[in-house]
Image (cartoon, rainbow, N blue to C red; front, side, top):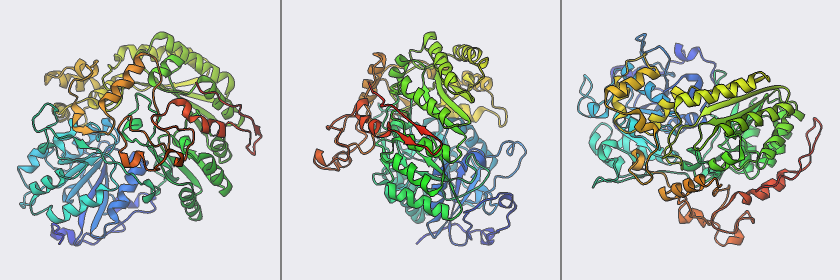
Length: 627
């Protein structure tokens, strides 16, 4: 029998006119009465604009509210609210955060760690898990159980481990119902027993019950959760609001994971293997959305153009009259129907991500797109009259030289000769991430990153190219948090609310005896890592193998959609890897079994490098050779 804490003010009926929600033009919000229900605060430690742009956050909101005896309301961080001593309230009913039994954070970026601490203080809740376990509220009831998940914490939870009672490692679809069941039975009767029960479940990390150092006698790593049957779950928009990056667009996650294996990219490893939603399902979702007046369709995936039926999907959506946007695309191969459908639907920007200007450096980072392929995409953007073209680069990659920076400049100037409208580039500093082949690599010093960014800006600004560059100093803070350990929790606690800046952050580290150079420097392969507690699926030996290839300036292995028969990186289990049985039953005949190399993407290249009528003119794309 579910037992929920009851207070007199919890009997207050849901207020549809609550002023915090009244100011928002939302569609799809779920408002429930609190009586007899388990209250959960789904919290995004950033602004409403940023949080509501996250499809994952919306899906969690639906999953939690699908439980009849659960009331899930949203809470967002608001800049300046804590300093102004404003209460932290839920969006749906204006309930104080401290009144919820469970506080569930979804964290997308390391820089939001500071906001988590601020929100705990703003709510009047003890910031550290140990403090909450050793005390109670004024009425003797336990403090809210505070749990976190999301890509910003799940692969290295250690800097935030002292703050959370539990951390969900990996994908949450299958874990959320089990978590709710456990909390129904034990949330108020035996909190420590509840922690021990969660500790026995796959994917749940209870920091005070597990030592994180792999040399400890009681070390037990937490295996990451991943969904083997993605089509079982409806991964499309739940809420609509104009106050987001996508402004009322209907979002659909068409695939999860990316098998390209870019060596700097966390998502390319921790969301392996790539999985897809079926074409028929996606077209059905879009048809329903358009019938409800949502004709702007956003395709969400780590690599939208890698969906095995992206051409058919783009064509089908275009035939429906949908206006299409895509979160990210590869140019090897290029999906011409997708680009032409985006143009026909009025998309304003085409984005290409070379990541590095030279082929040598692209080999180092395992970015197999060639300059020829990317220039074909630039030419297509020009021919189809896209108003803007964006090029995404990273600066400070391992082994990067001034010659590589010059090739980045030369690449952009070639693109400028082809594309004469608005051209913008991003020069984002490389930050080493846990569970990637570059996890042991040093970060380039901020002063050198700034010098290279200035070189790029001076060379391109006079040609009408807009150069955007993230702050190297803040990138250093991100790198420290990305590679951090539990000692960083003291730094987060020591920084006064509202006073954060990079100088204060590193000065606080120094006062606490922590060396900036340790977190930013090169680490010895094989030494213990703060994130050893997380078993991401990909083995450390595989990361080391990819790092050796990088040092040889060689591209490595990949994991295309619907591949099978491969256990090379160990992300897949036997059941998944051999789900098709005999090799001839596999859907992609180019794969011969075992690990794939870049040339195994050739079937998509041939399929998509064809002549297409755009409706805006005839576009011819010659066959694209792959090395």
